[in-house]
Length: 130
Image (tube, rainbow, N blue to C red; front, side):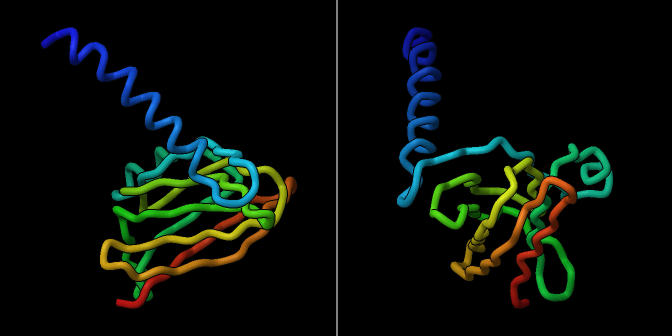
Protein backbone atom coordinates (compact mmCIF):
# COMPACT_ATOMS: atom_id res chain seq x y z
CA UNK A 1 0.00 0.00 0.00
CA UNK A 2 2.81 2.40 0.89
CA UNK A 3 4.59 1.62 -2.38
CA UNK A 4 1.41 2.35 -4.36
CA UNK A 5 1.10 5.76 -2.69
CA UNK A 6 4.79 6.41 -3.20
CA UNK A 7 4.53 5.71 -6.94
CA UNK A 8 1.24 7.58 -7.35
CA UNK A 9 2.68 11.03 -6.55
CA UNK A 10 5.26 11.08 -9.39
CA UNK A 11 2.72 9.57 -11.78
CA UNK A 12 0.08 12.18 -11.01
CA UNK A 13 2.65 14.97 -11.13
CA UNK A 14 3.79 13.81 -14.55
CA UNK A 15 0.22 13.63 -15.84
CA UNK A 16 -0.50 17.11 -14.46
CA UNK A 17 2.54 18.61 -16.18
CA UNK A 18 1.77 16.76 -19.41
CA UNK A 19 -1.76 18.20 -19.40
CA UNK A 20 -0.23 21.69 -19.46
CA UNK A 21 2.04 20.76 -22.34
CA UNK A 22 -0.91 19.46 -24.37
CA UNK A 23 -3.40 22.18 -23.40
CA UNK A 24 -2.71 24.63 -26.22
CA UNK A 25 -4.68 23.99 -29.37
CA UNK A 26 -2.92 26.81 -31.23
CA UNK A 27 0.67 27.91 -31.02
CA UNK A 28 3.25 26.54 -28.62
CA UNK A 29 2.33 26.48 -24.94
CA UNK A 30 4.22 29.09 -22.92
CA UNK A 31 2.78 28.22 -19.50
CA UNK A 32 3.54 30.91 -16.94
CA UNK A 33 3.41 30.48 -13.17
CA UNK A 34 0.66 32.40 -11.41
CA UNK A 35 -0.76 33.03 -7.94
CA UNK A 36 -4.47 32.80 -7.24
CA UNK A 37 -6.42 33.79 -4.14
CA UNK A 38 -7.72 36.98 -2.65
CA UNK A 39 -10.84 35.70 -0.92
CA UNK A 40 -10.30 37.95 2.11
CA UNK A 41 -8.59 41.31 2.67
CA UNK A 42 -5.61 39.67 4.38
CA UNK A 43 -5.10 37.31 1.45
CA UNK A 44 -5.28 40.20 -1.02
CA UNK A 45 -2.70 42.15 1.02
CA UNK A 46 -0.40 39.12 0.91
CA UNK A 47 -0.70 38.74 -2.88
CA UNK A 48 2.62 38.76 -4.71
CA UNK A 49 3.45 41.50 -7.16
CA UNK A 50 3.06 40.83 -10.86
CA UNK A 51 2.55 42.85 -14.01
CA UNK A 52 -0.90 41.32 -14.65
CA UNK A 53 -3.87 41.13 -12.28
CA UNK A 54 -7.03 39.33 -13.40
CA UNK A 55 -10.15 39.70 -11.24
CA UNK A 56 -13.33 37.63 -11.45
CA UNK A 57 -16.48 39.35 -10.20
CA UNK A 58 -20.20 39.87 -10.55
CA UNK A 59 -21.46 43.13 -12.10
CA UNK A 60 -22.26 44.37 -8.57
CA UNK A 61 -18.57 44.06 -7.63
CA UNK A 62 -18.80 40.87 -5.54
CA UNK A 63 -15.81 38.63 -6.16
CA UNK A 64 -16.11 35.16 -7.70
CA UNK A 65 -13.91 32.15 -6.99
CA UNK A 66 -13.73 28.59 -8.31
CA UNK A 67 -13.35 29.87 -11.86
CA UNK A 68 -11.92 28.05 -14.87
CA UNK A 69 -9.75 30.40 -16.91
CA UNK A 70 -7.12 30.63 -19.59
CA UNK A 71 -5.00 33.34 -21.16
CA UNK A 72 -3.64 33.03 -24.70
CA UNK A 73 -1.53 35.36 -26.79
CA UNK A 74 -2.70 36.67 -30.18
CA UNK A 75 -1.16 33.62 -31.89
CA UNK A 76 -3.15 31.27 -29.65
CA UNK A 77 -0.24 30.11 -27.47
CA UNK A 78 -1.44 29.22 -23.98
CA UNK A 79 0.16 31.26 -21.16
CA UNK A 80 -2.15 30.70 -18.17
CA UNK A 81 -4.69 28.01 -17.42
CA UNK A 82 -6.41 27.03 -14.21
CA UNK A 83 -9.52 25.92 -12.47
CA UNK A 84 -10.81 26.66 -8.98
CA UNK A 85 -9.10 30.04 -9.36
CA UNK A 86 -9.96 33.43 -8.05
CA UNK A 87 -11.08 35.84 -7.25
CA UNK A 88 -7.62 37.18 -8.18
CA UNK A 89 -4.95 35.79 -10.49
CA UNK A 90 -1.53 37.47 -10.44
CA UNK A 91 1.10 36.68 -13.07
CA UNK A 92 4.11 38.12 -14.86
CA UNK A 93 3.41 37.94 -18.58
CA UNK A 94 5.77 39.04 -21.35
CA UNK A 95 4.82 42.20 -23.23
CA UNK A 96 2.20 41.45 -25.85
CA UNK A 97 -1.48 41.09 -26.74
CA UNK A 98 -3.60 38.53 -24.89
CA UNK A 99 -7.12 37.13 -24.70
CA UNK A 100 -8.48 36.04 -21.29
CA UNK A 101 -11.48 33.73 -20.96
CA UNK A 102 -13.18 32.63 -17.74
CA UNK A 103 -16.08 30.30 -17.05
CA UNK A 104 -18.29 30.02 -13.99
CA UNK A 105 -19.46 26.68 -12.62
CA UNK A 106 -22.88 27.34 -14.22
CA UNK A 107 -21.26 27.54 -17.69
CA UNK A 108 -21.41 31.34 -18.16
CA UNK A 109 -18.33 32.66 -19.96
CA UNK A 110 -16.71 36.07 -20.21
CA UNK A 111 -13.65 37.10 -22.16
CA UNK A 112 -11.55 40.18 -22.73
CA UNK A 113 -8.59 41.22 -24.86
CA UNK A 114 -5.78 43.07 -23.11
CA UNK A 115 -2.24 44.35 -23.59
CA UNK A 116 0.79 43.89 -21.34
CA UNK A 117 3.61 46.43 -21.55
CA UNK A 118 6.97 46.50 -19.81
CA UNK A 119 6.41 49.97 -18.38
CA UNK A 120 3.13 49.42 -16.50
CA UNK A 121 0.92 46.89 -14.77
CA UNK A 122 -2.29 45.61 -16.35
CA UNK A 123 -5.60 44.88 -14.65
CA UNK A 124 -8.28 42.73 -16.32
CA UNK A 125 -11.76 42.46 -14.80
CA UNK A 126 -13.95 39.64 -16.05
CA UNK A 127 -17.39 40.64 -14.81
CA UNK A 128 -20.39 38.29 -14.90
CA UNK A 129 -24.13 39.01 -14.69
CA UNK A 130 -25.74 38.41 -11.31
